[in-house]
Image (cartoon, rainbow, N blue to C red):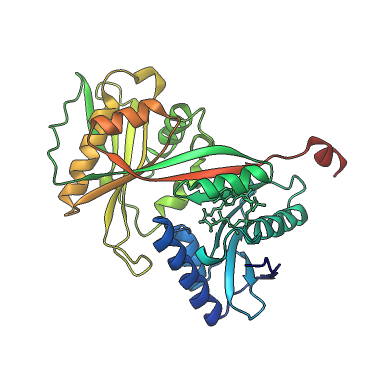
Length: 322
Ligand SMILES: CC(C)(COP(=O)(O)OP(=O)(O)OC[C@H]1O[C@@H](n2cnc3c(N)ncnc32)[C@H](O)[C@@H]1OP(=O)(O)O)[C@@H](O)C(=O)NCCC(=O)NCCS
């Protein structure tokens, strides 16, 4: 087959026909690769649009058929732009993936003086790695999704002496939670930087449920030692899957590490989710976070999928000259 260099078009909005073609392309790739190439929030954005502007890159064949697609989100000022891309399984190794990533790099060069770009590959496929590394990106972050049945036995949560587990009290616990979260995630790329505003934005979400946001506190002093914020994910109009429980954020203050609070809080949260009638729980964890992966494995979670983030290596000369 000859390599026909396709046209990569950049658009801010997809037509209904484009939406149909992009989802068909993603489906074809997902069926072939065994991993769906786009994340849930990108699919929602494609289907329903959204407040945040997005850049869509469409690679079409000479006959107008969609053969490649990239979704580029340039709104994250902290981490820089992120992209997800897919090439039709029958049109791979013709330079389409490279053309899409280069087009995304041109966009980020325009929108970010540092030209930052993260490529997310769902499924850790070797072709994604070969493409990204070949264009000078580094394999920066590996995020595991783990799952566990909520029907499988769950031990009784046993609290160390003097520790009680109780639900979060909106308004009263906010500041202490932000402090403990920052301490627990001091070395975590995003989580440790959450502010009161970040917390309150989530408290205003329809899914927020303080009863599923559990705190471990020192009974005598009220000091916050750790927390397990659970979330019921899906099961509403915006999601096309059955509801599933999520270990949304689990954190233990470093001073309270080693006392079994991580296991205590995880089990308490899973029991809460089971009490809500859910049959499965999921979570995301950095592969490099071995203590957390070990804890979740010990509590019956197993690997469900792997997402890899490749980061563009910024040329310091380019940065200095901008
Ligand atoms: C990853 C993906 C986008 C690559 O698309 P593509 O159009 O086949 O990529 P290109 O033809 O532009 O390949 C560019 C380079 O990547 C490397 N590459 C791509 N696929 C490869 C493979 N299967 N094996 C080895 N190298 C590969 C090669 O270096 C290639 O250059 P070359 O053909 O000159 O040797 C495509 O396989 C895909 O859609 N995968 C599923 C979705 C996904 O993983 N997206 C995340 C991408 S970061």
